[in-house]
Image (tube, rainbow, N blue to C red; front, top):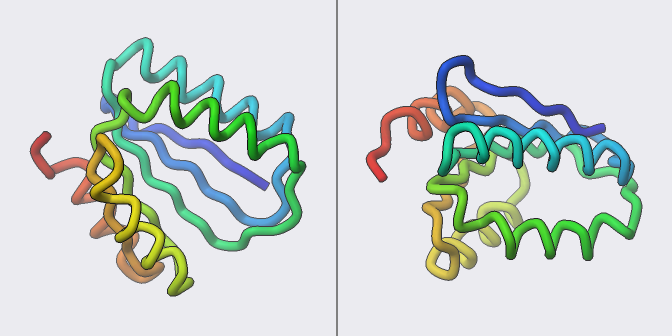
Length: 121
């Protein structure tokens, strides 16, 4: 399941991944992100990865296309999780991306939200 939330009156969105993700659900989240980008300009994103379950393989090329097209529209990305590979991936990707990327442990989700709200561009 993938869930989408927006922080009211801001340019911050949260994506919560908790189990299987369908292509339909993925497309809905992408549409909402694009709408926020069109409304606010550059956005800040929190990816709360609780559990990665089965997912529709057609999401992979769709996500690559979305990322290449919209990464420039994100200034910050906070990745929240409990997996060492997520922290490693975040550190590897940070210097390669146009946005600031930072990993937070599950217990530090509020620190991630504060970082997204308060860190300068």
